[in-house]
Amino acid sequence: MAGAARSPEPIGGPLLTAAELDPAVRTFLRVAAHGGRWDVDTEFDWGTADADRLTEGERSAVEFVTVIEDHLPGYFAMYDRHFPVDDSVDLPTFEHNRELYHFSVRWAQEEDTHALALARYQLAAGMAEPDTLRGALAVEGHKRFDLPYPHAVQFFTYALVQEKATQLYYQHLRRAVGDPLLADVLGRLSRDEARHFAFFADVVQLYLRRHGEAMVEPIRAVVADFRMPLADTIKGYWRWALRIADVARYDHTEAYEHLIKVVNRAVDAPSDRVDELTAFVAACRSLTEA
Image (cartoon, rainbow, N blue to C red; front, side, top):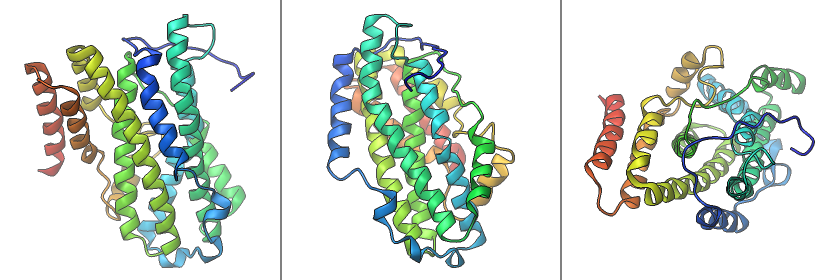
């Protein structure tokens, strides 16, 4: 990001200290260093990619998740705006944001690898031509992405749900697709998303332990109005999402049970407000199962 034009919009709400955030960051980096990294060019035999082994719905699902993953520059730019590492913030905030940057820059590299792998599959399998695919991805990729949250913990809660939901969807899709190469790619993506979820789960737990009941309403607000990335910018998003749900289960609220576990692990003796939060999250989940 060096030399890029910046418009910092530092986020509000309490922040963890850099020292509090450090263990979660180090854990993520340690796990990533032991088997987390993989290379798009050398990891797969792209010559075996075969879109003829996919149903029309499976092809649509691949196209859909490629668009979502390819919007990585927008996601990363959002973190850069709200957690700036420059002189627009005071020193304690800079220390926090710099610690977070150790995670976010590597998170971005991994998510960009996902985008590359999915695009590479489309090209290798004959689903798209390079120029056509680049143009289609650019239509969505140049749109600004942001989250309407005033508190830092809400960004981490959103990412917790989103990463777990994406992990679960890749698992479901992997079991459905007819091309073994694509199944291998989706398996790699799913494992990465599981590690990303673990980081955000650690951070949300830290917020709950450090700030307690003050985190209840911000977390509740995320769940109450949760939408997966680009839901408001991709033309025909909901029709597309419903279509790929026929291929593999696509339900972000499946991740809510994991959020409940995070809350319960963080609070030794839940108060009435914490109990109300977990009941609310569970109710949001049950609405989709009725």
